[in-house]
Image (cartoon, rainbow, N blue to C red):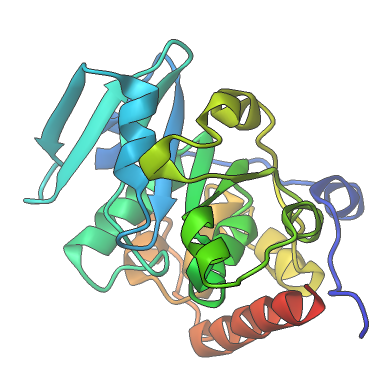
Length: 255
């Protein structure tokens, strides 16, 4: 089977220079730390994010409502990062308050720690691919590896890391297995392998929106993000989602 067509961010940036980005002040920007790098935990519901969050932040944690909502966000301090745990989501979008809060925090993230359930890769990697399409520096924690092994599910972690283009750390959060390598992996966070055709479309928007991540939201029809920048929301969400799902399927077929 042919390899998934992808390019590294450096390859694409050389071919398509980044335009100057303009920043729109948002509730998220005001809510989040202005002094430390923002490390944001992202994942589907019930993947064990809270264990990672507690490990990174220790005992001193704040829980407060995100501005303008009743959605609670946990945030704490690490020696190097301000750490935020977002609501569990299946994709970055704006269909309800939880998704909108997660979206706005992810847009402001310096590093994304994406927690993935090793038992449900087909489901969880859709969000992983979307985060990669957003151009975020990220690391994947492949959690529940013990359960995957018990079910006879074998994951080639090195191959998965190579295909995604980001560090992948196998973990079993309930036993803290793999956590001794967590901080080192976070420090290696990088942008993943991007779909070249989608990446080109995103860069065509960069002179009108703030970032690659916001450009993706606009292309996927997010009216709130489009309105922030005075542009029309796109109408290709379904097509982008279908192709992203196909990319996940091709990746898993090659595993």
